[in-house]
Length: 115
Length: 111
Image 1: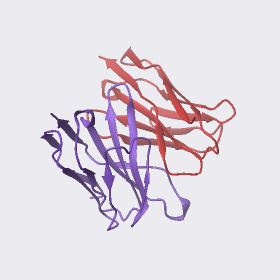
Image 2: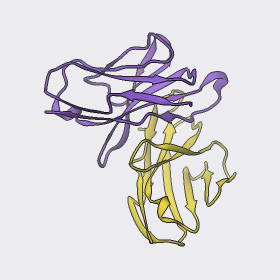
Image 3: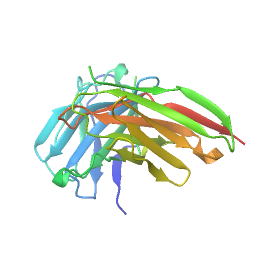
């Protein structure tokens, strides 16, 4: 089944404790992206990647890191989480080969709480 | 500054009603506009619009784009309780693959 998976789905942590949220897709998509969703603010893009070893900042990259060493994986790293990073996080992927489409497929979401 | 604005913020209707959701945008070098439906989980794709005046249709849902007036509408006819969700509109910013999402319209359909 074509899908985007994220782990963990739920995470409660404390300020300053480094964490990684994994994202993997099995659709051979070039494009991958991370979003956070907060009440009243909608979905905001954190980072995106056009292909392996190519990443770029979205609108809210502060406090986050990403890497794209393999096509299928795009982990989101919080080196020193703070309470304002408490949010619902979505990973998404898209097939942009041949300039085709902006349609993104979203993972199930990771609900992160930083105490 | 690129932006996407959706209206109304929320809407409550009864089953069988027809609803119209609005998405206006300001972005240079427009490429596409996308509609998503979000229930209690991840957004799912509904439509991608690139050309003005051409209606996209899927069952009771349809959408159209007006590139001159910079907006799109999403229509849902004969609404059902299963249509209750947040409807999101998104636009890629000029010349990039950064996406701006509107804050969404929360639709509640009462039986």
